[in-house]
Amino acid sequence: GPSHGGLPGASSEKNRKTYPAVKICNYQGKARVVVQLVTALTPMPQLHAHSLVGKLCDKGICIAEMQSKDSSISFPNLGILHVTKKNVAKTLEERMVEAFRMGYSCGVAIHPEIDVLQGEVRIPRELSDHQRNIISIAAANQAKEMDLSVVRLMFTAFLPDSDGGFSRRLEPVVSEPIYDSKAPNASNLKIVRMDRTAGCVTGGEEVYLLCDKVQKDDIQVRFYEEDESGLTWEALGDFSPTDVHRQFAIVFKTPKYRDQNLQKPTSVFVQLKRKSDNETSEPKPFTYH
Image (cartoon, rainbow, N blue to C red):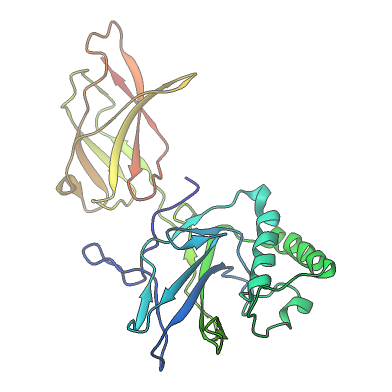
């Protein structure tokens, strides 16, 4: 889908979830932390056209307030909403304008004339027509080269100024690259073979399925049927995590078919489906009789 679940932290494990977090060293007090998506593979980070979504997010970025008592701040429900290819330049232009307006453009390359203006922004900047124009051109150029399969998180902390606003900016820090789980470097789901490709409408028959690497807690065997109008039936094979053998085999029981009084054999599809991101394998045929 266009949006993925909350980003886990780098040290996240199954029973101990962590999330992206930052700590401001040698400082105790209030702060504002702005999180933006930036490119991962360009010499200097550039703003990315994908959007951060979640509770504290607006206009594709996330802004959190850190209280005096906090030593660090974590971002538990950050999701990434994918931009469509045709909207990259337009979204990027809006993102650049907003970043420059609000003083959140430090640490990213937009355009040399924009990048030199790094002073404190206590009230949102007004952009001249010339500035809007060069941003528009920069967005169009960067959009052409943008890799949509990888991003990094850029965290910028702002400390209170004498007016109580948050304009004292600290140097931004960027995360390691975050790859799209649908990109080629994420393991692709694949059914290699099944020991039976037909079964009785009553279901409950055991099937041995060989597959490419799967995680036992994050996989489903999905049976489904479609016609011209779309999905007409779906059901899941029955198995528990202990029925997944060393990430490469699943022993499951077939689900009951929707029509228990079939007049003639009917062909449906079976595929692997990952729960965490809804990624699916190429389907294989299965016949109910």
